Length: 313
Length: 305
Image (cartoon, rainbow over all chains, first blue to last red; front, side, top):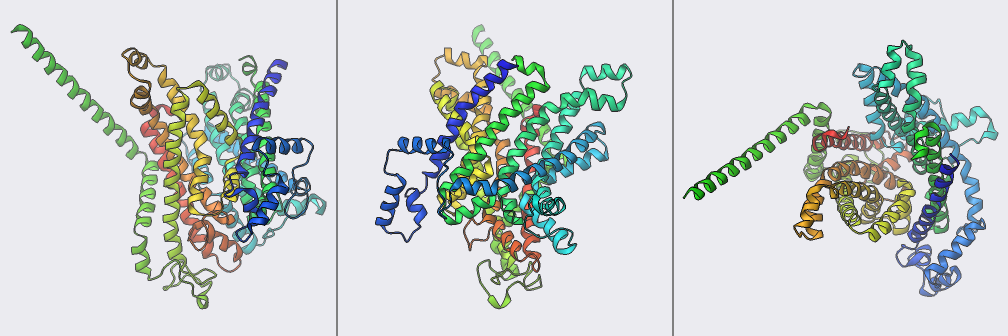
């Protein structure tokens, strides 16, 4: 296990390097360069040249890259056009997004695992078809559309939830949950569908295997059969989907946060687009990409934990 | 004399075999199409896709029937509920929502089509050449890994922020976002095709690498590419709507479903029609392409699941 962990940890380093290069390149793709793009179309040539000088954009690209990376390693992610440091801004917007994504995952798992297993057990019945339809709806209705629908029904008409806004934990658990439930459902619906599909198909695969037939022949009861014997093996592929869904939720939060006015990273990015605040965009993209790489690492390690065969190969 | 007779018989036999093969292929195709048509879900998908294409093509005709157009402002008629005059109501500038939703179909389908074609072509090129050159492979696949590490919605938003809102940039960004997984898939299909004995035989016969690559390996990667393209189509429609909703996609005053929905968000207390109709069109077309994609996958790649 130690060797497996070490091997996986080392394999992350080159990916992180490539990710940083990709993110760095993205921002330098701006037509006319970042300085011209930041100042907008009415900027004079002198203004642009001055800002380019100030931002160090006249240095060779690799110098700029290493200066940026050096700063990142010192915790300095740059300065926003609002004058605040990017690190500060991210700290202020980080929690709502993480809360939202985690809550979305919890809701998705609570719905997807039982329904997926049920559909696998009742294969070919009405229950199975209903689950398939739900899964299809999940991948076809975009999160922001579902969010608008929920908002219209539960906030505008029934008034069960506030239309928008975000209450942090400090406002009380109930207020927090109330403010974040609709965004979390909207965000999580698609991942519910994906997890449900995955749970169903991997459960079916496992239920068809010989050792389950053997257990059945030996008289193992339904609950122990599904819960104990099949569940663990079926989980291996579901764990990957959970990891990927969490990342998808972090990135998809941008749109849902805008719908519900949640002051998270997504809203930070969307507002930064209007301000042409490239350093903020760059930093948030880098942050999410690094979290993504780390979660993939964690998923792989979890794999090794759940299924010992993976450690060896 | 004998020899010519034998030759004639031989070539007649070969002709028969060729005919038989063609006949069998035809039968197999008919069987698969039959299976596709027997699957209700794929047929529903096909119908929805065709419906959307017809709506997009007949947009001028349809708006001719309603007697409206997507661009005319009429401030005196702002935010009117659906009526005989404005079938889907009007938006905050008094523009006809029916005409905007119908013309929005054109934008969505155009974006979806362009993105899936671009991503398919780029994925084919990158995937095929990376399976033939180790250095190229290492470089291209690392770039793909780097791009894939940034979640797709975020990458699209970031690209749009840098490039600026326009239909061309939406297509470009979404193609960049969809290409890495396409290339990965082509590469793995091409790698397994390259190991086949007939490729070895072609090499021994002196076929050039590019001949083998394009005439013999490429056809083996086409089915997964086409299947993936239908799913890219669906997700491009979603992401375009999301980008336009955020104001970073198709610029105003173009009638994108996403930007109509964003107006609906502003007037959620009063104007439900700004959400219902564009929302319905988005969901139905995405569902159509998803169902159609599932059907095409079963048609082209029956062993996939």
